[in-house]
Length: 456
Figure 1 (cartoon, rainbow, N blue to C red):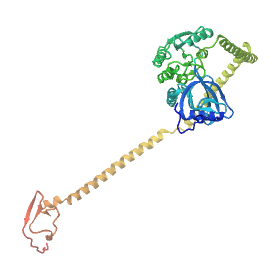
Figure 2 (cartoon, rainbow, N blue to C red):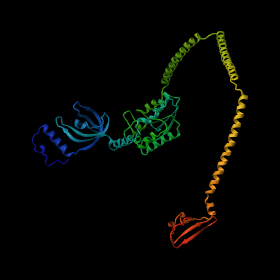
Figure 3 (tube, rainbow, N blue to C red):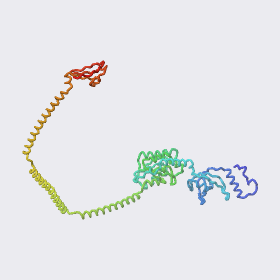
Figure 4 (tube, one colour):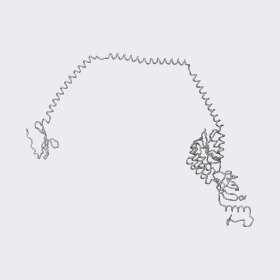
């Protein structure tokens, strides 16, 4: 190790120094020459002081070092470290001078191997949460009556033996179908998704268990793949996820319809024991007995009430016979009364009609006389009208212009058809029409000389 030339070295003076000075010199050497670095190890002897500081030992298989994380840094850690946790700390090497203990001052802490894996886990969880893949509304209930259970896990997994043992103990009548798949290693995520898809396509089971035992985050990483989560969410049957131990959470747990803390718990959630079934059947039996008893009591009361109101057949027949007689009498009265009233009314009308019948012979004589008077009046009126018509026709014939023309007169009119009555109506260089009794002619006028008319 190279010491800083600017750092005073009390050991080089050859003088006697105190323990405090020695420890301070060593602390300064450590802090100046070893930079801030990441250190991995397992937590041991973890203590959370009342002051808020954390004290623990960081160790591996061959060595250990004391560590302290002060409250100002510890309050920003997003998990609570526990005994045996594998972590990675970002620390500065130092010396606690009062006791001369070598230690590291921790500024940041994270789960071992979490770095990129944990960040990827959180990012995928946030993405699928936003898509609604983990919504409670999407979760399906586990069927109460199950005939067949499917298991997706490895043939070599210890969890498989625990599952089969639990199912045989709790529900030996249920069939089990295994869909074997690797649960860790390269390509395990795709194979797990393929096994789930196969079970979904075959639809042989009522519920599907996706399980494996506990392990580190790297061991369980196959169940944090997006393809596994989406395949679980689209499975045709309810899925129970039992991956790892109680404290382990994977993306598959959030996508499943039900999460079990362990594989054994998954088998227990999927089945019910004979004792549970018998207890429920007993409860149903007691409920049925109480219901039947209530119904029998109600029916007995109804029967008693009916019996009190039930008449003997003879009394019932006599009562009905009396009702029939009353109805018969009412029917006869209803039929006969309108008929009698109608006959009486008809007799009255006949009497009135006989008294008011007119004498037709007298009226016939008056009618014949009126007809003769009417015919004579029409004849006289027609003769008068004919005489008047002949007289009017004669007068009209005398006024006929044609007769005037036949006596030698003519009618003059200009080219517009206007009658010429005086010489002033005749214009020079024009044409006039002369109409006689038999024909008409046009005459051209060159000049007009007006003369006074002579008395005839």
